[in-house]
Structures are given as C-alpha cells and as structure tokens.
Amino acid sequence: MKLMIEKRIEALGVYVLDVLEGLGEFTNFTFKTMFWTFRPPYRFKLLFEQIYFIGNKSVFIIFLTSSFTGAVFAYQIYVGMKVINADSFIGPLVTIALSKELAPVLSGLVVAGRCGAAMAAQIGSMKVTEQIDALEVMGINSYQYLAVPRILGATFSLPLLSAIFLMIGYGGAWLIGTKVLLIDEVTFSSKISDFMELGMVTEGIIKATVFGFLIGVIGTYQGFNVTGGAEGVGKGTNMAVVWGMITVLVVDFFLTSFLTKIL
Amino acid sequence: MSDYSIEFKNLVKIFGQSTILDNLNFGIHKNKITTILGFSGAGKTTLMKHILGLTMPTSGDVLVLGTAINHLDELALREFRRNFGMVFQYAALFDFLTSFENVAFPLREFTKMSEEQIQEKVLKLLDSVGISREAAYRLPSELSGGMRKRVGLARGLALDPHIMLYDEPTSGLDPITTHMVYDLMRDTHYNNVHHGFTSVIISHDIHATLKYSDYIVFMEKGRVVEHLDVESFKKSENPVIRRFLEL
Image (tube, rainbow over all chains, first blue to last red):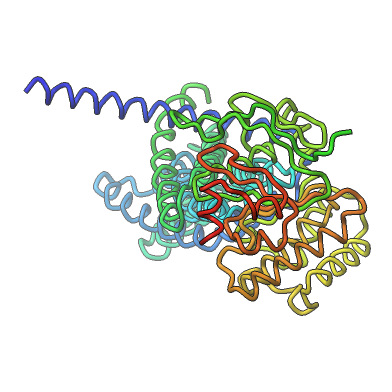
C-alpha cells in the first residue's frame, strides 16, 4: 500500500516537472521569437504571404461560420425575447454578443483549426526532413525565418477576420430577423446605437489580436518541437489545434474579466 | 599557418550520462578530402554538428579556419557559417521551392547580386552538377534521389564555401548513382581547391571512402581509433578497422 502511494506521488511529481519544463520551453520560445521579431532582416514578403494565407484564405470559412452563427443566434434570442415581448432587442443583443465574444472567439477557433494546424505541419515536416538544419547551416535564423512571419501574420489577420465575422454575422442575423421572423427592419437596427459602445468593439479587437498571437506561437512552437517522422508531424499538428483552441477559450475568460473592468 | 582547416582540441561532449565525444584531439587537413568513418552511434554526426557550431562542446575547442567557433556569439557564428556548404543525408531541399530557387536562395539571402547575375550563377552551378534546364524548374518532390543530392550540392556551393560537408551523401542511392555522386563530389573538390577548399564526408561506405578520400578518420564510441591517409589506413593492423575493411 505504502509503495503504491509512493509510486503515485512519484508519478505526479514527474508529471508536474514535465508540465513545468514544457511551460519553460514554451516561454523561452515565445521570448526568443519576440526578440527576433525586432531584429533585421525584416522579411516583409514572408509576412505578407502569411497574412494572405491566414487572412485572405480564411475569409470563406469565416463567411460560412459567421453567417450561420448570426442567423442561429438571432433565432435563439427571438425565441427567448418573444416570451417577454422584447423581440425588438434582437439587433443590439446580437451585435453586442458578436463584437465582444462570438466574433473574436469563433474566428480564433477557426484560425486555430485551419492555420495553427498548417503552421505545425509545415514547420514540423521541415524539421524532420532537415530543412530547418539547412537554414541554420546557411546562417539563417530559423525562428526569424519561419516563426516570426507566421506569428505576426496571425496577430495581424485575426482582428481583420474578427471584423469580417462581426459584419457577416450581423448580416445573417438581420436576414433571419427581418425576412424570416418578420421583425421590422428599422426596429431591428435602430436600437443598436443606443446600446453599443466603442469599448465593446475595442474589446473584441484586443481579444482577436491576443488570440492571433497565441495561435501563432502555439502552432510554430509545436512545429519546432516535432520529433520522429510522419507520426511526430501528425502529433504536433494535433497538439497545435487542441492547445490553440483550449488557449483561446481559457484566455478569453481572463481577458473578459480584465477588459470589462478597464474598457 | 596551420595545415588544418578544422582542429579539435580536447573536445568532449556529454549528453546526460553518455559521453558522445571523448577528448578528441585531431585536425582535418586543408584542401583535402577527409572521410569520417565509423559504425552507427560512433559520434560522427555529433562531430559534424560541432564543426558547424550547431552543438556546443561540453569542454574543449573547435577551431575552424583558425577561429574557435564555440567562443563566437550567435550573430558572429551565423556569419561564420557562410564558410560552409553542406549536403544533407536526404538533400534537405526546401520543398516549397524549385531546384533553381533552392540554389538561388542563399544568393538572394546573403549577396547583393542582381537577378540576372543570380540567374547566370544558378544555371551555371546546376549545369556543373548535371541538372538540366528543364529539371531546374521542378520541385524537389519531382526529382529522383540522385538529382536531389546534386541540387543540394549546387546549393551548398552557391556561396563559394571554404569547407564542404557531406552527411551520408549517398544514403538511399543505388550503387551506380552512388558512384556518380562521389565522382561529382571529387570533381567539385578539385575544381575548387585552388581557392582553398576542404571536403569532409561523413560516411560508413568503406569502398567509396577508400576510392575517393585523401584521409580517413575512423571513430568508435566517441573516440578516434585511427586518423591516417588512405594507403596507411588500408594497411592498418587495428582489429576494429580490419573488421570494417573486411565487410
């Protein structure tokens, strides 16, 4: 019995040490990439390529996600609000929810799934085929060449995608609200300006920027830490998606608590 | 002036509880082809990583072209690495770039050459390793293993390095292509030796090594068992080497 308890405590200790080591490596990686962000050469071409890949190439999936999210959200609120005869509040409610929460969080989840995975897979396969070593042997900093453009690309793209999400989501809600649920068009829109504040939009933009940065760091970190062959790349890709999504949701909670107080 | 391009002085590398390189003291001759030979796990690849400054010694020094590279700061080390060209085991070509772009990559990164000059130099390099114009614009995935190695060699030569490193350059190649690649490596060496060019090959292909090398360093369990010219190596009475030679 005593031996079993000792073994369990030992296993717990090993797990805690592993977690701490992982956190330390992740923090080290984050600072290293931030350091190389501000050092020349500045690779604008690579940055624009990443903004195109993360931003432009995600627009369609954001369009689909946001339009249906807005439409469903309008429906659900209508059902609740109809009971208390407050269906005219659907417009502001949808807009507030989209701008503060749904747009940054759902855009973050979409980008974590689509681009976080791609970052880990691209960098991971370069790692296992010695392409990263080839960069280093040439004297090129692989963090600066591979990680920095991807992290900055995600950081710049996600607020823009979030803004698109907000607009399209509102459009979806407006269509359902006015054309299906037959709420008066003026009523649907008029109350938005009474309830919306600049701080709500700012909150969404700040959240999206932070999520973009974290998704970029997690995706590239997982790529650089791939070991073994194809199996390792698959594992790294999976970890990038899982940790990217979890991080978006967890950090959203803390950001909401903090930003609601200051904005 | 030293006769060596690369010198190891009391070099020790320990990973955890294992001693990977055990007090190495030897030099790699300037302008010669030296092959580092040994069984798997002998420490050959770790030694190559020390030459490139990708791994730092636990103790001791690595002198490359007279500079102790383990004492350079990161930026100076990156700058210094431009003295090296390297051909990787599986070529390690950037899979998102064509052969042409792969060879042009270091020129675009580190020189101020115009696009016309780059085009001229890249095509000349690809031509010298036997890559056709048509293959120059193909992606690495569309090339055979031998062609990838040749493009890798052209890329390694792009910045006119002083030291060319080959990590198991013929792994996965058929015997005919293996000898073609070795012929190419030898030709490359002698075409460049006039401006100071040292070739270091990591291998366990004993037959090719005896045919193409000037010097052989034989390693076992992190130590240098023998460091001899090829003719002396063939006559070595060391039982480990005799076993290797009789394979």
